[in-house]
Image (cartoon, one colour):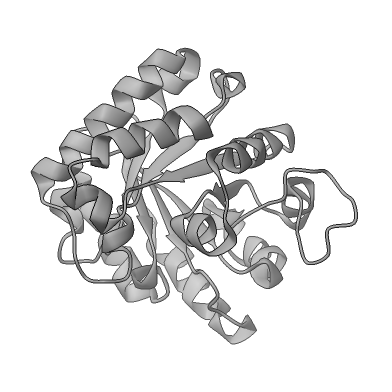
Length: 245
Protein backbone atom coordinates (compact mmCIF):
# COMPACT_ATOMS: atom_id res chain seq x y z
CA UNK A 1 0.00 0.00 0.00
CA UNK A 2 1.40 3.42 -0.98
CA UNK A 3 2.40 5.56 1.98
CA UNK A 4 0.25 8.67 2.36
CA UNK A 5 1.86 12.07 1.78
CA UNK A 6 1.31 14.62 4.55
CA UNK A 7 2.65 18.11 3.85
CA UNK A 8 2.65 21.20 6.03
CA UNK A 9 2.17 24.54 4.28
CA UNK A 10 3.57 27.23 6.58
CA UNK A 11 2.36 30.02 4.26
CA UNK A 12 3.79 33.45 5.23
CA UNK A 13 4.76 32.33 8.71
CA UNK A 14 8.04 31.36 10.33
CA UNK A 15 11.38 32.88 11.20
CA UNK A 16 14.67 31.25 12.11
CA UNK A 17 13.44 30.92 15.71
CA UNK A 18 10.65 28.64 14.47
CA UNK A 19 13.00 26.03 13.03
CA UNK A 20 12.77 24.29 16.39
CA UNK A 21 9.21 23.26 15.50
CA UNK A 22 10.45 21.65 12.28
CA UNK A 23 13.18 19.86 14.23
CA UNK A 24 10.60 18.61 16.74
CA UNK A 25 8.52 17.27 13.86
CA UNK A 26 11.57 15.50 12.44
CA UNK A 27 12.36 13.99 15.84
CA UNK A 28 8.79 12.76 16.27
CA UNK A 29 8.21 10.92 12.99
CA UNK A 30 10.26 7.80 13.74
CA UNK A 31 8.15 4.86 12.63
CA UNK A 32 5.60 7.03 10.82
CA UNK A 33 3.82 5.30 7.94
CA UNK A 34 3.48 8.51 5.92
CA UNK A 35 5.87 10.51 3.77
CA UNK A 36 6.29 13.89 5.43
CA UNK A 37 6.96 17.29 3.88
CA UNK A 38 7.20 20.87 5.10
CA UNK A 39 6.85 23.91 2.85
CA UNK A 40 8.14 26.99 4.67
CA UNK A 41 8.68 30.49 3.36
CA UNK A 42 11.48 30.65 0.79
CA UNK A 43 13.74 32.37 3.34
CA UNK A 44 13.78 29.19 5.46
CA UNK A 45 14.07 26.47 2.82
CA UNK A 46 17.84 26.05 2.94
CA UNK A 47 18.06 26.12 6.74
CA UNK A 48 15.08 23.82 7.18
CA UNK A 49 16.43 21.31 4.67
CA UNK A 50 19.70 21.23 6.59
CA UNK A 51 17.82 20.75 9.86
CA UNK A 52 15.36 18.00 8.92
CA UNK A 53 16.34 16.20 5.73
CA UNK A 54 18.45 13.60 7.54
CA UNK A 55 15.30 12.50 9.37
CA UNK A 56 13.50 11.89 6.09
CA UNK A 57 11.39 15.05 6.05
CA UNK A 58 11.09 16.54 2.56
CA UNK A 59 11.23 20.32 2.25
CA UNK A 60 9.39 22.26 -0.42
CA UNK A 61 8.54 25.67 -1.77
CA UNK A 62 5.10 27.27 -1.75
CA UNK A 63 5.26 28.46 -5.37
CA UNK A 64 7.68 28.74 -8.27
CA UNK A 65 8.03 30.70 -11.48
CA UNK A 66 7.64 28.86 -14.77
CA UNK A 67 10.91 30.19 -16.20
CA UNK A 68 14.40 29.04 -15.24
CA UNK A 69 15.69 32.58 -14.74
CA UNK A 70 15.15 36.13 -15.94
CA UNK A 71 13.91 39.60 -15.06
CA UNK A 72 11.16 38.52 -12.68
CA UNK A 73 11.77 40.57 -9.57
CA UNK A 74 10.65 38.83 -6.39
CA UNK A 75 10.00 35.46 -8.04
CA UNK A 76 11.80 32.18 -7.38
CA UNK A 77 12.39 29.52 -10.03
CA UNK A 78 11.98 25.80 -9.47
CA UNK A 79 15.72 25.42 -10.06
CA UNK A 80 16.40 27.90 -7.25
CA UNK A 81 14.18 25.92 -4.91
CA UNK A 82 15.98 22.70 -5.79
CA UNK A 83 19.33 24.43 -5.30
CA UNK A 84 18.21 25.52 -1.82
CA UNK A 85 17.40 21.94 -0.83
CA UNK A 86 13.74 21.58 -1.82
CA UNK A 87 12.29 18.41 -3.32
CA UNK A 88 8.61 19.49 -3.40
CA UNK A 89 6.70 22.58 -4.47
CA UNK A 90 3.07 23.63 -4.09
CA UNK A 91 1.55 25.16 -7.24
CA UNK A 92 -1.91 26.57 -7.87
CA UNK A 93 -2.92 27.09 -4.25
CA UNK A 94 -6.25 28.91 -4.08
CA UNK A 95 -4.54 31.85 -2.39
CA UNK A 96 -2.35 32.17 -5.47
CA UNK A 97 -5.23 31.65 -7.90
CA UNK A 98 -7.44 34.23 -6.17
CA UNK A 99 -4.86 36.71 -4.92
CA UNK A 100 -2.48 36.64 -7.89
CA UNK A 101 -4.87 35.80 -10.72
CA UNK A 102 -3.23 32.50 -11.61
CA UNK A 103 -5.02 30.51 -14.29
CA UNK A 104 -5.00 26.77 -14.93
CA UNK A 105 -2.50 27.42 -17.73
CA UNK A 106 -0.21 29.27 -15.31
CA UNK A 107 -0.42 26.39 -12.84
CA UNK A 108 0.30 23.82 -15.55
CA UNK A 109 3.40 25.76 -16.63
CA UNK A 110 4.64 25.88 -13.04
CA UNK A 111 4.02 22.14 -12.60
CA UNK A 112 6.09 21.46 -15.71
CA UNK A 113 8.82 23.76 -14.39
CA UNK A 114 8.86 21.83 -11.12
CA UNK A 115 9.34 18.51 -12.89
CA UNK A 116 11.99 20.08 -15.11
CA UNK A 117 13.94 20.99 -11.96
CA UNK A 118 13.50 17.58 -10.36
CA UNK A 119 10.83 18.66 -7.89
CA UNK A 120 7.57 16.88 -7.10
CA UNK A 121 4.72 19.36 -7.68
CA UNK A 122 1.62 19.37 -5.50
CA UNK A 123 -1.08 20.76 -7.78
CA UNK A 124 -3.96 22.39 -5.91
CA UNK A 125 -7.59 22.47 -7.03
CA UNK A 126 -10.82 23.42 -5.30
CA UNK A 127 -14.18 25.16 -5.54
CA UNK A 128 -15.54 28.27 -3.83
CA UNK A 129 -18.59 28.23 -1.56
CA UNK A 130 -20.74 29.82 -4.29
CA UNK A 131 -19.68 27.12 -6.75
CA UNK A 132 -20.40 24.36 -4.22
CA UNK A 133 -23.85 25.79 -3.41
CA UNK A 134 -24.61 26.05 -7.13
CA UNK A 135 -23.88 22.32 -7.54
CA UNK A 136 -20.78 23.00 -9.66
CA UNK A 137 -18.10 21.53 -7.39
CA UNK A 138 -17.31 18.46 -9.49
CA UNK A 139 -17.37 20.42 -12.74
CA UNK A 140 -15.05 23.11 -11.38
CA UNK A 141 -12.58 20.74 -9.74
CA UNK A 142 -12.28 18.27 -12.60
CA UNK A 143 -11.93 21.18 -15.01
CA UNK A 144 -9.05 22.50 -12.93
CA UNK A 145 -7.42 19.06 -12.96
CA UNK A 146 -7.66 18.83 -16.73
CA UNK A 147 -6.34 22.38 -17.15
CA UNK A 148 -3.62 22.29 -14.49
CA UNK A 149 -2.17 18.79 -15.04
CA UNK A 150 -0.61 18.77 -18.52
CA UNK A 151 -0.32 15.50 -20.42
CA UNK A 152 3.46 15.85 -20.21
CA UNK A 153 3.16 15.06 -16.50
CA UNK A 154 1.65 11.63 -17.22
CA UNK A 155 4.93 9.88 -16.45
CA UNK A 156 6.20 12.23 -13.74
CA UNK A 157 5.78 12.08 -10.00
CA UNK A 158 3.25 14.59 -8.70
CA UNK A 159 0.33 14.93 -6.32
CA UNK A 160 -3.03 16.68 -6.52
CA UNK A 161 -4.39 18.49 -3.47
CA UNK A 162 -8.13 19.06 -3.19
CA UNK A 163 -8.71 22.17 -1.08
CA UNK A 164 -12.28 23.45 -1.03
CA UNK A 165 -11.67 27.20 -0.91
CA UNK A 166 -14.46 27.74 1.58
CA UNK A 167 -12.86 25.34 4.08
CA UNK A 168 -9.34 26.81 4.14
CA UNK A 169 -8.66 28.42 7.49
CA UNK A 170 -12.36 28.63 8.35
CA UNK A 171 -12.69 25.60 10.58
CA UNK A 172 -15.31 24.22 8.18
CA UNK A 173 -14.86 20.92 6.39
CA UNK A 174 -16.96 19.05 3.84
CA UNK A 175 -18.64 15.85 4.94
CA UNK A 176 -16.72 12.62 4.35
CA UNK A 177 -19.20 11.78 1.59
CA UNK A 178 -18.47 15.10 -0.14
CA UNK A 179 -14.70 14.60 0.18
CA UNK A 180 -14.93 11.08 -1.22
CA UNK A 181 -17.14 12.23 -4.09
CA UNK A 182 -14.68 14.92 -5.19
CA UNK A 183 -11.63 12.68 -4.74
CA UNK A 184 -13.31 9.97 -6.85
CA UNK A 185 -13.96 12.54 -9.59
CA UNK A 186 -10.33 13.68 -9.45
CA UNK A 187 -9.18 10.06 -9.72
CA UNK A 188 -11.35 9.57 -12.80
CA UNK A 189 -9.84 12.69 -14.39
CA UNK A 190 -6.32 11.42 -13.64
CA UNK A 191 -7.13 8.07 -15.23
CA UNK A 192 -7.98 9.94 -18.43
CA UNK A 193 -4.47 11.44 -18.40
CA UNK A 194 -2.95 7.97 -18.02
CA UNK A 195 0.59 6.86 -17.20
CA UNK A 196 1.79 7.38 -13.63
CA UNK A 197 -0.88 10.04 -13.20
CA UNK A 198 -3.36 7.22 -12.62
CA UNK A 199 -1.74 6.52 -9.24
CA UNK A 200 -0.87 10.09 -8.21
CA UNK A 201 -1.79 10.68 -4.56
CA UNK A 202 -4.79 12.94 -3.97
CA UNK A 203 -4.33 14.96 -0.79
CA UNK A 204 -7.11 16.63 1.13
CA UNK A 205 -6.59 20.15 2.48
CA UNK A 206 -8.91 22.56 4.21
CA UNK A 207 -8.94 22.88 8.01
CA UNK A 208 -7.27 19.51 8.65
CA UNK A 209 -6.77 19.24 12.40
CA UNK A 210 -5.78 16.58 14.94
CA UNK A 211 -9.43 15.94 15.81
CA UNK A 212 -10.61 15.27 12.24
CA UNK A 213 -7.45 13.90 10.61
CA UNK A 214 -8.09 10.21 11.24
CA UNK A 215 -11.47 10.03 9.53
CA UNK A 216 -10.31 12.19 6.63
CA UNK A 217 -7.06 10.29 6.05
CA UNK A 218 -8.91 6.97 5.99
CA UNK A 219 -11.59 8.10 3.56
CA UNK A 220 -11.70 6.53 0.09
CA UNK A 221 -9.17 7.97 -2.40
CA UNK A 222 -7.58 10.25 0.21
CA UNK A 223 -3.84 9.76 -0.21
CA UNK A 224 -2.65 12.27 2.36
CA UNK A 225 -3.18 15.81 3.52
CA UNK A 226 -2.01 19.35 2.83
CA UNK A 227 -2.09 21.01 6.24
CA UNK A 228 -2.04 24.74 6.94
CA UNK A 229 -2.12 26.26 10.41
CA UNK A 230 -1.94 22.94 12.26
CA UNK A 231 1.50 22.27 10.72
CA UNK A 232 3.07 25.25 12.49
CA UNK A 233 3.14 23.48 15.84
CA UNK A 234 4.91 20.13 16.12
CA UNK A 235 2.49 18.79 18.70
CA UNK A 236 -0.49 19.28 16.35
CA UNK A 237 1.22 18.18 13.16
CA UNK A 238 2.57 15.02 14.77
CA UNK A 239 -0.95 14.08 15.86
CA UNK A 240 -2.11 14.43 12.25
CA UNK A 241 0.80 12.30 11.05
CA UNK A 242 0.00 9.65 13.66
CA UNK A 243 -3.62 9.60 12.48
CA UNK A 244 -2.45 8.16 9.15
CA UNK A 245 -1.17 5.01 10.88
